[in-house]
Image: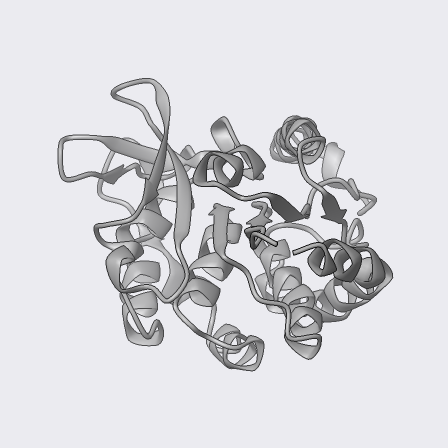
Length: 261
């Protein structure tokens, strides 16, 4: 029987990306391997780590060092309030590999090029860290990340927050997706200010985008993290358990798909 290729799609979601690690802990427990990985925004960070050969425990250790001051700084550019250049420096210290062509598992990060006005899938060759920074550059918040050919990259969530279709184009026969947005949000007081309304509205748009992509996945895992905000980096430890529990709920279904390979 011909081997069916299994892909893993990791959605964006800011600090909710820590929940991806909980999901990966369960995959590691069952020795589930992926032939390819694609991620957007926070999903590109965790996906890049997995593609580079990091274990979930190593990701937890790395995450314990994450804070606002080593992820961002004030921007000197009029195109964004902050720069995510410090995140790039951090990832270069932590990742075993920093170029696509050296990754043990094929990986794709999704970004949006403001110059060309289109989605760009960064994969196969080039600098992994720059690609992750590009995929995480939330428009307006972070200055766009410059590409080698004059591109101005911003967060891939602009067009594709959970890149299931990218994996299909890469040849995946089976796609497991992790959606950090489908759970919605039930935290209090977020709509009491202009910024809060913007955050809630943006999350609704992203949730809709993820839902469209999810219809093309074979299994979609949805961690129950509606009570946790995308900006709550300091609550990283609260994201792992919901990621684990949501993966365990779907593990029999996932294993059934894998047995088909």
